[in-house]
Length: 82
Length: 255
Image (cartoon, each protein chain N blue to C red):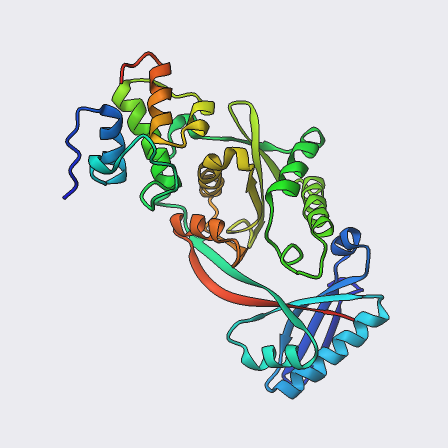
């Protein structure tokens, strides 16, 4: 069973999409470094973050989002406190 | 068949070849391709290859390339006995229908438009920098610069044939795509698709959109040929539900 219980909404979004425990999701986790975060999952991550925080992520940010930490940084750009 | 093409039949066996001026233009020496070979014995196949090589020499060919199915052991043996060297391996892939493709977030959906000559420098730069696989690029005897020129020329040729689509996202060129419809529009041969390394994360949406466009045009089936060394693209096609149909070994001989 995947443990996705966390107060960190960025981690929660990643855990939901990637299907891995929240404890395994750190800011250093990198795109394509694990089989679960592949190009299909990346599209789902974008959708999940947009839905979670009610934002529309710019294309340049989609391209730059290569780690969980970078995702957090990008989400903050849109005025979200995470 | 072009007048310059070659076919030789002997009983149930045959060999066919064609000149490939598009390769010659890049490499600077005469080139040809074996397009088909069928024989019941290795000896027959060797004799057919000799016929094809004689034709090739008479037509100024220095570099003869041909693919045979991986399971055709007698043909492979004939290629090796005739002095041909295996230089690449390719897979043919296909997909029936276009249902069940992954959903693309709206913001990641690229735009396709017919390429124009103004796009050419950008598209050729992508072909030059970001394509590392293909029969010439994987032949260790061919200089990388010459093989890359072949890919760059190919982009230009596809544009001139009206087959090349420029793919944009957010106003930026992220790649290109070319396909050729056959069987009265029922089948699409995916010729060349590529995304820049900078926008690699948009490669999958690019491919998905290309397939969705085929579905919207009532195309029933598509197929393509991919280098077996290009594992990134093979994995991408696997994610898109393609079936692996055949494995081909590519041989070449300097005449």
